[in-house]
Image 1 (cartoon, helix red, strand yellow):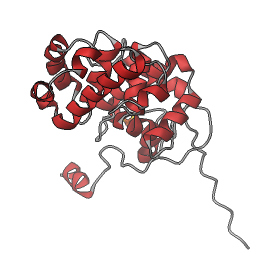
Image 2 (tube, rainbow, N blue to C red):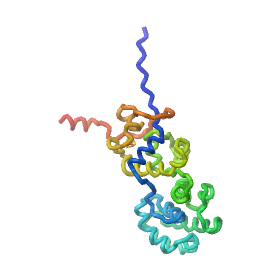
Image 3 (cartoon, protein in one colour):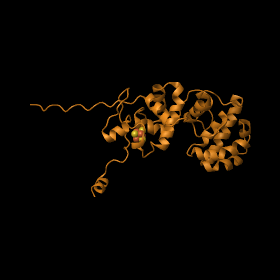
Length: 253
Ligand code: SF4
């Protein structure tokens, strides 16, 4: 006689991305970019400088940079050595100097000194990829944009609202799951959550999403309590502080 079949494991369901954004927006009221800027051009330059650096570091150098070269025309005509000296502390300063002077020159030559308002024109500027373009579109130009950086990619995969290896794929999936008027907020919230809570070593016990997070569920055996959408494979990163033999032994002592 055949043994009775084991009960089927409960299906894990991916959480609705709108639920995640709503909770994070309440956890981080007023979430927005931490880069300081006053014009779309300044945000474009600051975002290029933020690659492989921190927003705080960029904010230390941009007031002097923008005071000395306040417009695309001024930056396009600037001596590279002077710009390199000003942005040196952000790292990769030679490439970044080439990029921001090149972008300024292209804005002057091709767009009459105005930062263009569409993705194709933005990513055609030197040093500008989709992430930078989306930052500028969403924050400074009033056009829906969802920047995906390493934090967004890591956090969204862990929670289970995307199953994506690349920022481009994650952007597509998040944009498909969220209303356009929440795209930029979603990115800002996921970035802040990735910096403060869902770090490379995540702080799951104090996370407002731990009841709906596939990564946490994979480590605890507690499936997310709510959610809707398609079934997704849990991300292959380790949950926080798995019980180890050493920790168990310490506890017994
Ligand atoms: S429960 Fe843990 S892994 Fe999931 S989002 Fe929160 S901090 Fe990140």
